[in-house]
Amino acid sequence: MRNFLLEELADALDDRSGQFRYFFVASTGRVQPYAAEDPAAHRVAARADAISILPLSHAEALAIQSDFVETLLDGELADRLRASSLGPAAQGRFLQVLSAYPRARRSWLSFRQRRLEASALDWLREHGIDLGKLGLDQPARSEEEATGLRFDAALEQRLRQLRDRLRSFSARGEAAALARTRLRGDFRVDEIYHSNAIRGNRLTREQTEELLTRGDCVGGLSLREHLEVVNLMKALERSAVLAASDAPLTEHAIRELHAQLFASIDDEQAGEYRRTDARIVGRDYLPPESVLVPALLREFTEWLDESTADPVAKAAAAQAKILNIAPFLDGNGRVGRLLSNLILEANGYPPAIVHVEDRERYYDGLRQADGGDMSGLLALLIDRIENALARLEGAVRSPHNV
Image (cartoon, rainbow, N blue to C red):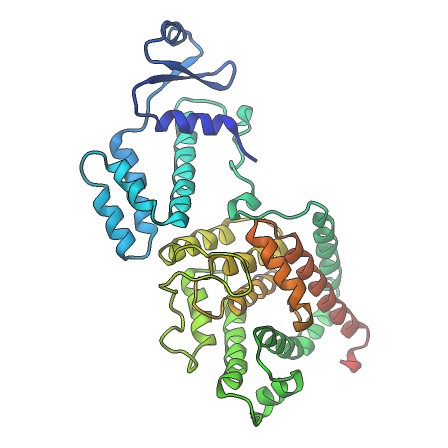
């Protein structure tokens, strides 16, 4: 939720024009601006509950610019921004360079605002202000806002019910563990078949299983279609290792999964971020400039590590953000689905396998997520987790029929 005090204080710290004087008035918990020559400013300055707010220094402002440039992939934009930060009128030149990169400019403004608000919090602490009384003892932005996503509050109840159902199933101990083991292979074949089929792979579910278990190839289909099955199985095996690890998910791990998916299919692009800007086929959406990809992914993986959001919501956010950032030239959907189920597995949930029959609903959910609303995508994942959990519960009741 927005905190207007934090925004006001951030604006005051950022104003180095000299035209205004700013005071934090402790009794009201607000920032009061005055024209520099306004006599009222002198009267406020004499008050015991008023603290003068000095702007950040020029060096501190340049440090924020420099830190933003360091988040960019080395390239022409980063070099031009570094050059623009030198000498007088640096801020104007910096923004002039960014004007040719609309998405990069928006990313810079968001980065800058976060840094200014962090400086505002530091300023309040340094002056002994009680953050709790100002409603600032919690993060300034909610977990949903931190990812630029939100979802319908009505889904909270479904998330709670799903957590309760999972706890009830897990409480069955050895029987639950045995059901998971028995169905793991079926879940993986399902995930491989459906994830590839959504992308257009023509192998049936039966052919997918035959290829994985006996190595049987299918005449009339391309080598790539066969490799997509084998590679996705290897990526799932690697994903399981990552899910079982206590280490946080990193950019490197995401690139590793992509490299596994495209091994012997496109070795040049496997695990490599895109270096071109392009539209997403089938969606009226322009992804961020390629130079922003590493910074955006790094920011998102940090959120995944630090967030206390519901695991299913995090899984939906992961899928939406990978498709939103589109870090790779190809395979973003499969990477997003892998990452989503990795998060679920790490938290004890069964996989949310998006079926090829769900394709229209799935793409509608992604289009909604492009606009910041992941309600449709989250509802779909909940449905699919409930379906997988029902299969596990059935395996516990009738273990010999699995």
